[in-house]
Length: 279
Length: 324
Image 1 (cartoon, rainbow over the protein chains, first blue to last red):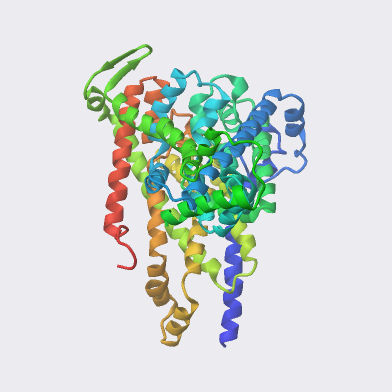
Image 2 (cartoon, rainbow over the protein chains, first blue to last red):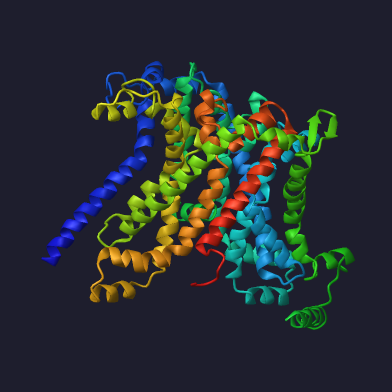
């Protein structure tokens, strides 16, 4: 009797989750299928249940690869900005987190408190003064201006600190006896040990930068500096005639990330559940 | 501890330079030596944070308050006292406040209750392909809000053949122009946020469920507690800290809402049906270029977030340490 109940429960639960998973993925599946539909028809009807299979074609993609130079400019900008943000923010944030975790120095607790406070302050409140600052320093409408607020990320500092606390301190002493400088200890010995945390934070910072919207919306003015989200958003008008770029472009923004996710799932989960604070 | 380490440094200098190794040929630069002392190194490492904290957080935080008392025109800044604040309490602001409050309450309810249930079900030993289901629920959080906006605009398109209108058609409801009706506009914003954040919140609750010792469930089962009693008296109390955490970040996130609205209406929704507090800040501060007034809105948002989250933490005992 009990066993029978269990099989029923098993079936019901698995069916429930199959449905839930389908609902979660449905919008993306719908987006991908729709990207093969004629853009004018898509604009008129939206995403529909009924698919006219004869209509499906690669036209939107052919158009975007041959005619839509600006889309690839946005793509390049997003790649450059995300790449630089990952490199710079990992470099600086890991140093700070490592230092907070391994050294005893005056003001350490105060600095750590500041890290936590910054995580809690809503960026939107600081946004206008920062915008003004960018204008005053002529960093408005530059890549530097877009990246600056992301470079020393308090979330990443926090994550690196938590990770570095667990590192064996004996290694540091051993290295000192061998005549290694403090910087050498970090770069040659400890940082390699922190590799998994670098992977998780590279993903968090990279994704954050790739999808970042509000700040670039304020800072970017000229078309040739548009990032993908900003560029795509300009096409989002009810009278738009660029639905081919919009729909195929949206697919090509997400799919690389989903593929990366399939390979580095563990690090995505580790990174995103620390940085899960919306924004 | 500190003494100890100092001793170590001396020992190392002594042994390292004079006995075990031949004398170093190149005399180390004095500046480099100071730069490498254990006293200075930690500060060198945290320097980027201090600089960025001062310039990119502390300065703007102070400026936000200062600017809210100013009228800011290019090259001409005047102190105008509370005039910005006197102007704030107008119909647009109250519309934004109402919308933001409804949005915050809805997202908190959806993004706390549904993930708890899904996490508990997902944690059950009966579910096969756990990682697969977890990944499927997580994938929406990889999309940018702009892509989510594109998708939801198309799924909820006005045309009667769009998916949303087809579904309500099954129940005999006439097609809705989702983006241009008050309640459905709000629904779209809540749906976009829920779709994107569900998977992340499930992860938090799954992590929390790992901390509940399985033996407690077993002994409760032997004592004859049914599934709901076990949920009420074991699962919920153990998950309480995570529930408080997720609710707090959802409240803060709710008050910060802007992007979900922007991708639907580009900052100008019909009859302000999608106007949020940060949206109003953007409209006034950036689009109208009234940085002083925008900053005043920002200060109000900050105060609201502060009051609501402190109040919530007090009511739920989130400030207490440990269990009760």
